[in-house]
Image (cartoon, rainbow, N blue to C red; front, side, top):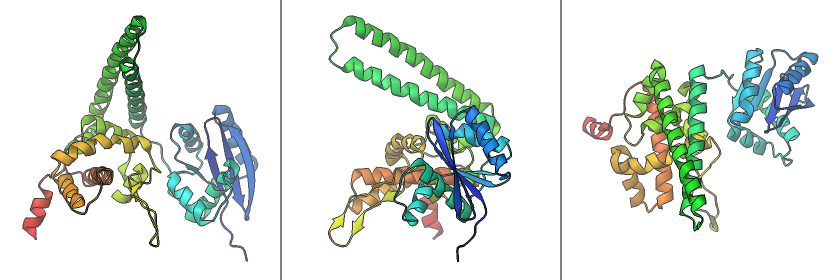
Length: 330
């Protein structure tokens, strides 16, 4: 006897289009739409025609490609969940799915929604959305500056080209400085963002820049039930491949998660290894166990994310003497 689940809708997002699967009575109805306002309106009509108003819709957290659609569905009062792609992939693997196409992925998401009933999504506050756009634009400009610096250091013999690169670098430096000031002003003008920023920078190794990146990618810490869940979202959970006595690959990041959040913690981890007592203690333990440097840096990144989760959840600044006080108390 087939088990019956409530009707759900799965959406698989790509840059230009998205595929939809309505899961109902153990069968699927497919749909395909353009990823733009016109496509959103056609989706709403498609759903209304099938009398599925109020049915649970689920989509993956795919960054900017899916944000506009999620906001449209929320404003249209459709219950919508935005789920970490890692959860969907693990669920697909558990079903032994072999086909990897957008329509098939939409079916998996719909089935996941029916069986797992993920939490509903609410959009970030306007200031959080603005912060994310400013921070990501800043990252783009810094990447452009790095490219131009690399070109400048290349073996370019043309004085005209070098002058042009210098001019562009000066422009990028000005734009970066302006954006950094805008980000600081935005955070300072919203008490909740300012409070969270001040908690984050109390952690040795986390600067104003890293705190801004963190708040841009994690506008609501309460959407995560644990620090481990946040670390998985960032993609800094360890992943090993071991089988029997013959297969033993080196540990590495899962890298399934928010790349913006993950990359934001690399340089802070390097700094924390020198100046953060909790991170230094972790480094010493891992070095004693013979761990290689990449594994150690990854562990420190993960530790910083755990500490960030802790200060935001408790509302208390980082205590650099935590370990020492813990030893005294014991």
